[in-house]
Image 1 (cartoon, rainbow over the protein chains, first blue to last red):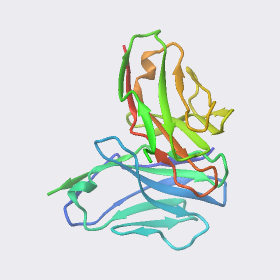
Image 2 (image 1 turned 90 degrees about the vertical axis):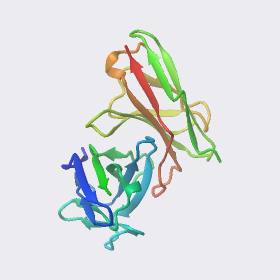
Image 3 (image 1 turned 90 degrees about the horizontal axis):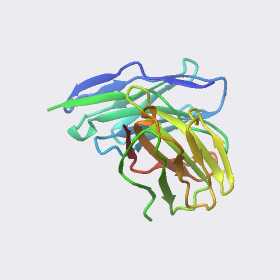
Length: 115
Length: 113
């Protein structure tokens, strides 16, 4: 069975600085998708970034980028120029390539941004 | 488009009561699913559906029933609520292709006393 592990329950960063959130996963599949979701206090789940496993190039969305290490089964999220609005819980998630593919989530990392 | 909507936003039940959490989407998505979120455990899949008339169990299905009579609606039924079902419940949907992003509803906070 696939599993996703986020080993950092809490992280903090100074405003305008860079922070990296870690995620590891376990799967025997060769093709799959990885996601980072943001959950602010409003509770809404917001997709931050997505990575297809067959792509070697790391995904980037504005200030958000990932470091995807397929062999190591590692998928970290880097947030550059952190802003107060980035404070939230962040979830790493995995989904295999299938019509019925289900999202499997990590435990989450709470990010605090200090002014 | 309203996206994925869930009702109610909050609910308090007594042990043994039954209720239905409603979920609807107006994006014509084939795939819909229910998750529960508990502290320190992330989101866990309860049930999912790949189209009207087709449902299947996820990781934590016990105590919950679902049905999918239309593409738009995917209600989650608690048959006899237990305190262990106190949680935040999310409904999500996506196109049943392999690449599309999953969209989440705003969640329902359920407390069982």
